[in-house]
Image (cartoon, rainbow, N blue to C red; front, side, top):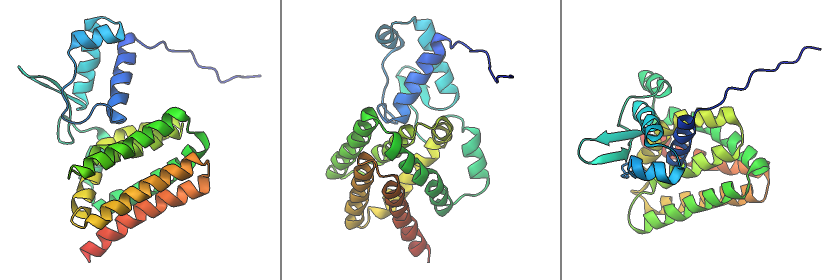
Length: 236
């Protein structure tokens, strides 16, 4: 019998530091534009050397997730900061519209919501709940809640427990954040739309929590369809 067994490649400590900081950014725990702790502070918290942290930071800078400003410190990158990853560049080279983006999100995120209903653990549920609470707080302060909105959708991707889906959404994250910001900027002109969006997010969380994959798929489909219809009507 022939077994398809591959050798295990041990991860370097700097890889683990890189993964942890990147995940904090993708989950919205570290927000765009936020100043990060120093290398020394991170090294102490993670119980690793400053050289290890520095290596991880440089790799995050190279992909645009972190920006270093001379004399000011290290900051979480924004959508326009740093080099674009290949997926984003390919999307932009195609002269992609928001409607194109929303159609892709429909395919990715409806399936993710259904899988999350089957696989989400308590940590995932809490992450989604915190994102909604953050959105509500931002909106009460007359801000858009863009980062919390994107983090909610990333939390669903993590809850799918599908490594390939998570990888695609990780690379898609910057463009997703940009799309949500553009969406909410237009939607916010009608305050009643924001309450609809919040209600849709709460409904998505409720059906994921109740472990109903079909309703989770439909809830996400209804949410993205609402935004897609809004922009189609606007363009017409």
